[in-house]
Image (tube, rainbow, N blue to C red; front, side, top):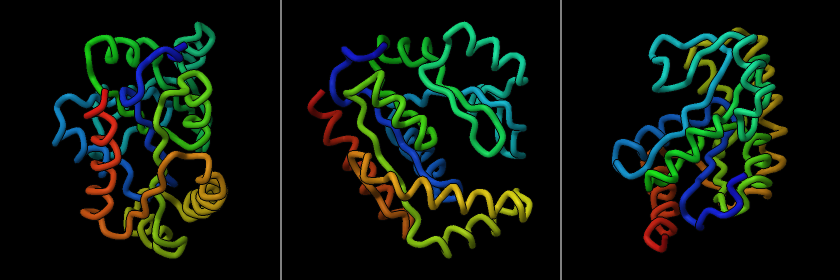
Length: 192
């Protein structure tokens, strides 16, 4: 459990797939060396620009299930047919080493983290509209038509629970969304 950490040490950033969350998180990490991304485990195959250990720990389903059985995750979910999990020890170590920890995870995982780490700040990145999100997913050209439809359906569900997050940022323009995200996080880290 992480219930005794101080406010401003763990931030959970969630969004529907294709909203620009990963781009925002990468920029945040580049500009703040005292922030550390918790690298999730996943069973999904890597995308062309992703690297094992940097973007995700890419593992087999049997490896993932074994780690889950051993209680190695703070949370784990099945998202778009693949397992994703937040490694417990990595988060603890990064906090002990003095980093502000950023979790880039789905909305269900975010709400699970809230239970085990009530001091975590939950931030939801929202697309300007479902139509805009659909255009982004199509331009990305990494998913089949069936996957796009599934992601859009999931986006509706995810946006229906955004009120459970501490902050909602609309990513209409990347620079504006980044500025808002950075202001939100640094307002806490300056206090911690």
